[in-house]
Length: 485
Image 1 (cartoon, rainbow, N blue to C red):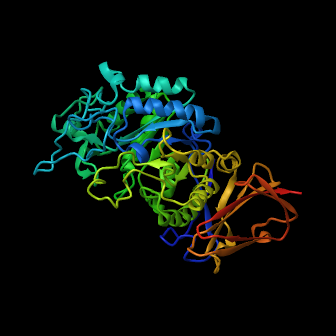
Image 2 (image 1 turned 30 degrees about the horizontal axis):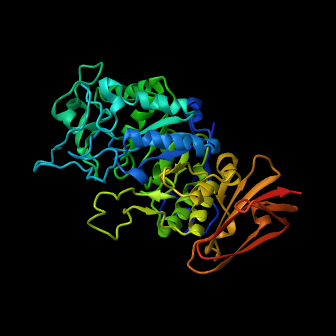
Image 3 (image 1 turned 30 degrees about the vertical axis):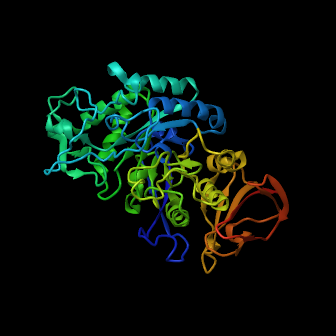
């Protein structure tokens, strides 16, 4: 059973502005080894959103899976995830083999009713559109695609939106196995602020859990291994629907990773999230902007007491490599938008700092760049075995004590290795000027003589005893393995 360290100061200044060591209490949670075991280590994989937005086709996805199985699976990246709007065909007349971005937000009439052509079955459950996913014909859903992924030795995931389709509510479609309809469980006042496909589901209504059970039973029949559930934590926090999804997975007969999106997750619900979800987004949508990277140092520090035991604070996808293929909605009207097609805007130093932080904080590693067109440097960055080992096999991950008290220009993270003779330490300069960093080892109860190895350069650097000092360029980082001599 996990002993969680939970701060007495759950506020936006947690662990940083107060400039005090963590004051902690121990909180006991129920132990459900089955759901935690599907993510005993931070999940690793690929998600289609950063490169393909809501418009990936079956042909493109299978081509991506071929590359992932060859180039990424040997390094532990095992999930391939289709992101949102797979139940829409795309605009009339589009070429699914050479697509250009399309507006995915559904049009609305004056009464805010959805005007759409979402693909559903007779029980109000969204199913893949056959224009983009031809193998979904005849009620096959994603089964053929998941079988292909599994034959490649990988696992298959999909994105879903919280709630029940508006059209199902308007048509009063029956909920499978019950006498209730979609209208009986919907909460029309509870809608997503940025995508108007769905109404919320009221967890207090009879038939609500049965609706979610029917969804996850269908996903299990398709062979889904990973669910990215969206609109879960942006205010208001959807406590009831998170609990219904957790229960629906437990009853469906197939292990699935439950990944909650999007954030920033509320710290006040940390124990709730840790007790129900394998991954939960602690940030808003994360893109290749340095300010987003710098902010993540604070977010991951605040959430560090909850790292591990099958439930992982999620810093979001890795926007590395080639992104935003053909542009995203609105990009053509706004040439300065970061959503135009581009290679990652972060410098090589900034990209290394991003990967250093994600691995030291054990965030899930879900790559978002295009596997078909990203360059060799991106692949080298995200497949460094020594760095990935920290993400997968370290423990006690936290920001070092003397990152505070006037030394915040260089953020220092520290972690334990698989035995007491191994430690990991990273230094990251989050400022726009060169900076010096230093870690007094005794402050972190590290005593004796240690051999230093640079994990990014695969080079042994000699020994250290009382202190490690570095000088870093702006936005640069180093990552060391310490082995006891």
